[in-house]
Length: 162
Ligand code: SF4
Ligand code: SF4
Image (cartoon, rainbow, N blue to C red; front, top):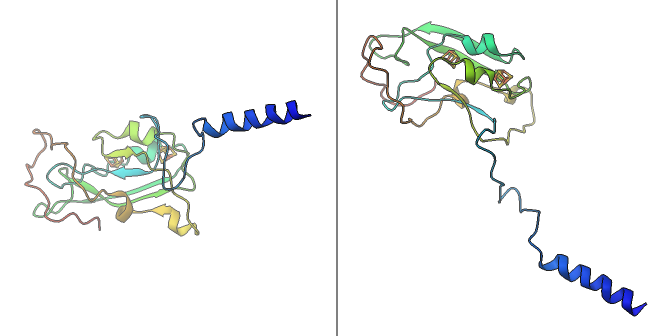
């Protein structure tokens, strides 16, 4: 009986000093793979202009009908994007989205990007329909407006997503 007890305690001690497979989530997060597909973002060029030109290709490519894009003409004096049009309405219904990444693949300007963020839980359906205010990134990226884009806009002052 004592032998069994010592053997059991030995197993406990071995497990005690072994590296833990659990982590202190949410303070600690496990790194995800580079190909992980999480929450979407719409990126900006380095001058603040939105990379999205409202072409609606992502909406067409989405197998879950999760994306709604309504484009509008840019004001040449204060454009949102370096194209003729921009996405005046851009919505993604996160409850429909299956994070397949087809919208990202379809985007001709690389505006749409699926990030590593996965904490999307919320308490209402309405909150899970993401609009421009939550999708258009407030930060600029390293992407430069292609030189052949006409007209050669200077950039956008202020990074509002309205
Ligand atoms: S990840 Fe897939 S399902 Fe989600 S919005 Fe993009 S295309 Fe649609
Ligand atoms: S995110 Fe890309 S594919 Fe979708 S409307 Fe904008 S430019 Fe077009």
